[in-house]
Length: 124
Image 1 (spheres, one colour):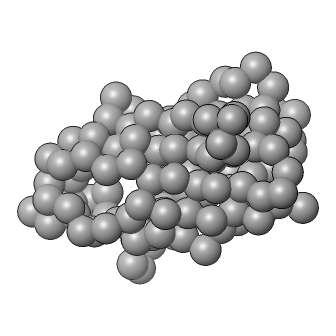
Image 2 (tube, rainbow, N blue to C red; image 1 turned 135 degrees about the vertical axis):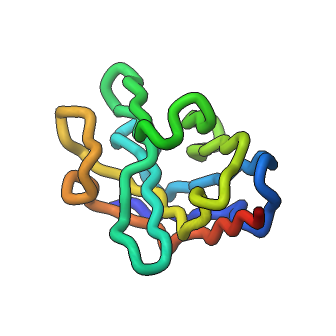
């Protein structure tokens, strides 16, 4: 079992940068695949990024590739999502998630543990 708590979401302007954090307890993040999903009002939750527990493979959704960066700090047991050049369409509730599949997961069904989300609002 692992508890995930997201933070860092707030109102920003288009073009701004923002860093989200996901703190895990009590188990270490490196034992899981960890990722970010987001859900905008009226839309389904969608994959944003993942970093795998085996090999540290990283994947991004096409919509954020080149603008977002996922990382982990093992010493602090925290995962980050650095978001640059934010667009109004990036506005959503952002969730961090953890799972134990062998393959690098991109589907929410492959993640067993979820945080409560942190809200990102982007004004144009």
